[in-house]
Length: 215
Image 1: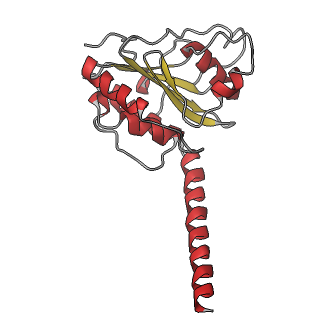
Image 2: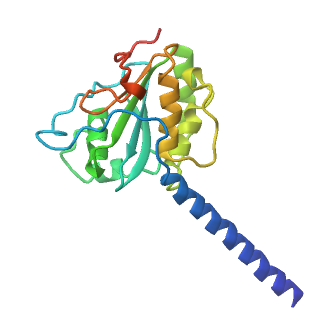
């Protein structure tokens, strides 16, 4: 009887841990940006039918943050290679027999279906820094729902301009964006934030220009 009681207590404990993890995950997704930036462009009048989204450079890392009320998500490109952790882009687009394939512009347009708050953080890396990012992308594996931002953040963490970005278990897309905002606010690094219409979403709207060639 004691063994059965212990099993029940252990089951309750595991249930409590799982519930706490779910609460933390939901709380993380509800966080908002702490650094102000320019308002997102409104959808309409041909937008987002026509986007100003150059495809990635050969050593460029682009983090895409979808921070809409309808949905939050994080994905990234390492040059032309997409990592969309726990995302539905490939599965949804793959249902269309006429889909031409993955592109940054198409990926951004897909995120814009949730609303206008979609940002592109673009960083030019050295060859060695980019090689390290590529190696982590290769080892990424599958990602559980709600852990998309953590997956992207942990791939970036500690490399080049992302040296100050911590490795985490759980983080929201908004918090990841705040880390990236703090980096592009430092002119030592080749990075910038853009709305899909080409406008700047750098903190304090300090537009340093699109830099796609590593220094």
